[in-house]
Length: 321
Image (cartoon, rainbow, N blue to C red):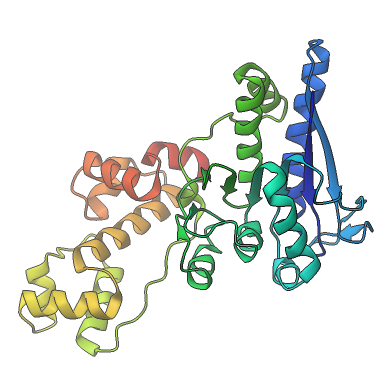
């Protein structure tokens, strides 16, 4: 039995959010046919008026008219893109999602497509992910959603899956093919696309360093600047409090209140970001970088790096140096 997949298109959509899942599902169908196995996917890209759509980079796709939302489909894919803001305020788009959702086996969002699903009420009370750059916006506009910016994808409910940015739609589509047709077919599609079936780490490794707000009080702001200018310095709570001319307890309370993060966590974040830059830009050993950035040992750097970035320093260097 062919499973119907409907990909929702709109003006300003991210092209790879559409093409990535499209190629995974159709690729799986081709490999199933080559093995003389039944099944696969009937994939359609739709737009509300059935007319071609232009992506955010100007690439145009031919699109079909939307199916009757009362018609059951297997999978609805909701991609993201800079056009998502206009799409979420288009009553026809949101109405179609709301009407189609109850009759779909699963709903898949890619990147900022999670905002469209949230607008349609599909993520209320759920944990969801999206592109790391859109995560604060999704969390701020939809407080009933628990937004986790780390996973490549997450099962948000029994029916809804949410994927992180852009290429993460490919990761999720491969996972769904594996669920439907087994690891062999999913692995074959991944190899054909020259991709991991399951990529290492989450999306934190791709995110830009988080900019932390400047404190209003000059002593706290000066401590921030001291940490950032010399990540490898001796930044114990007592030393930082002494620099701010405060007691350690009072300093910790004020720093957390103004910066939004405890001093120890802030020091660790700054040191990790400094290590990231040095792994990208230098050939120095992990041991040298660990010492220079204040971690003391390569093992301490590795533990902190895995916890904060999601991959080991060596793996990060292989990917981003």
